[in-house]
Amino acid sequence: DAGMTTPTHWSKSTLGQVAEIITGSTPTTTRPDYFGGKIPFVTPPDLDGRTLVSTTATTLTEIGAEQVRLIPENSVMVSCIGTLGKVGMAGCTLATNQQINSLIFDPNYVVPKFGFHFCRTLKPLLEHMAPATTVAIVNKSRFSGIEIAVPPLDEQLRIADILDKANEVRMKQLKAVQVAVEALEALTRLALNGDL
Image 1: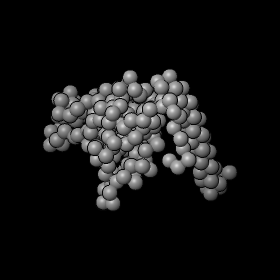
Image 2 (image 1 turned 60 degrees about the horizontal axis):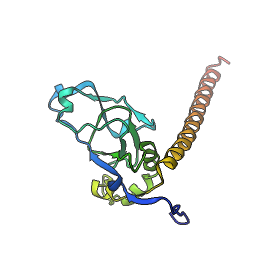
Image 3 (image 1 turned 180 degrees about the vertical axis):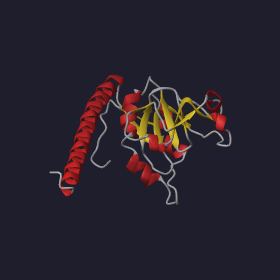
Image 4 (image 1 turned 90 degrees about the vertical axis):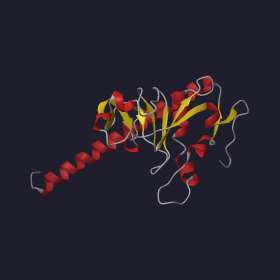
C-alpha cells in the first residue's frame, strides 16, 4: 500500500511460507449417503460475517468426509472462486468446497486469529488478481504467493485482540441498525394500516 511502511522488526513472508494451504473439494452428489451427517461442509454463503464457522447449511456424513480433506479447528477459510475474499475461521474440524482455500497457519510464525484478520483485508487484492473471466478465480499458487507482514507472535496476539474488539463493536452497531430498521418498518406498517 502506498504510504504504508512495515515496522523493521516485522518479517515479510508469503502465505505459502507461513501456512499449509488446502483447496477444498466436494464429494460426488450422486451419493446421498455422503450428505446429511454431523460434519460441517462450508461453501461461500456460510462465510457470512461470523468469525467462527461451526454450523453450515450442508453437512457430510463420516463416509462423505472420507472423500475430502478435513481441515482442523482454527484454520482460516478464504473464498477464491466466485465471491472473492469472504473469510471465516473453522470453529471445529470441517470440510470446504473447491471455492475455498483454507490456511493452516504454522503457529511458530502466525497466530490463527492474526491470520484471520489479515485475510479479511484481502478482498480488493483478490479481485485485482482475478483474471477478467465469467467467474472470478484466484488459483492456489497465486493465493499462496500473497505477501503477509509478520509481527512477533506477542504483537500478533495484541493486534488480533484489538481487531476482535473492534469487530465486536462493529457487529453490535450493525445489529442496532438492523433492530432500528425493523422497528421503523413495523411502525410504518402499523401507521399504513391505521393501527397507530
